[in-house]
Length: 462
Image 1 (cartoon, rainbow, N blue to C red):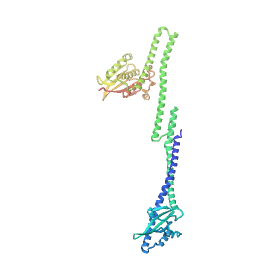
Image 2 (image 1 turned 45 degrees about the horizontal axis):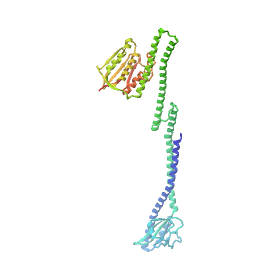
Image 3 (image 1 turned 90 degrees about the vertical axis):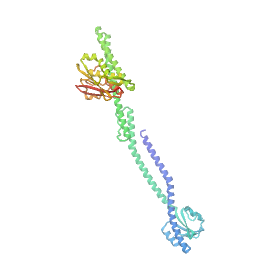
Image 4 (image 1 turned 135 degrees about the vertical axis):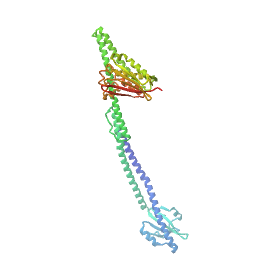
């Protein structure tokens, strides 16, 4: 299978060469012979007209042909000249053969054919190319001058022309072979590398890289497959990490619940202390419920981003209501909200339930990572045709290398693990998915030791 495309190119090349040779051998030979005959006939016809003109002058002055000119002509050419009278009798033969005085079955009308190939009415042995021209004087035809060349000479000229065509064909064949080699190295070899790479990816070897770096469509395809392999590997690692995180986050509360229940069953925990541990078990089940609900929320956002229920609502009022739900927690820790609104009422158009969830997650995070007796600044202001919402805490902050990964599902920074014992690591992922579904983004700025600020925007209601 690897060499199948190369084999097809080779077979096509061989077939092309055979067909080209057959075409040249069959049609080229005919065309060359026809061209050689036509060229030789034209040359002979010009010569025979000169002979007829000379003899016409001789008949005008002497009433007879001039053999001296014909003898000289024979000594410098490879042709044979016959002078015929109007009845077909041979008056003169430059070969001094017995043809002189012989009468041929020559038909004057045949001279209109310009040339003919054959034995010239049985006068010669073998094939000759013969041309005619009448000898006239004062509108009277006295005879005919005929010029004859052996066909061997004409065929030799045709063979020379055909040899040139064969040479050109061989050069073209060689150039096409060179092109085939170039195509092999430029196209077929990279395609083979791409095919091998695809097979490696199919076997799960996502670390393999296709070694094609050309800047054309083939190189672009190889680069795309390499990027795809990297993305698949990253997705595979993310999936494994996701499963590990989910397993860990489910196993920890389940282990606690089972341990406390087993201790109660075995009587290790006295009856008067069971209420305390029952509250711990309820807290762990709440944690499992929150984790399950968060995963369902992410799954819903992934599958139905177009299923948002848009409406007009007051972002100021929604912010105040969300802050009020955290009143007991904030009062216990001495945390206060610093609310800043550019206007008393800022109507926006979005999915109110989803945006409320965004605010809940952001404010909950701000409370978790704020020290006691701190403040959290929340602002809503209009910027152009949008409302800009900011949630800023003054807590521990986030390290620079962790900022890009806080949106990853189940990710927790090392500094947050001790403060967010009940968190699922899905809150910020949910926030980003909700805002992405709205066609918006969320920005984060953080300074370790000084706090973190999240900013997002929503379109104003019209």
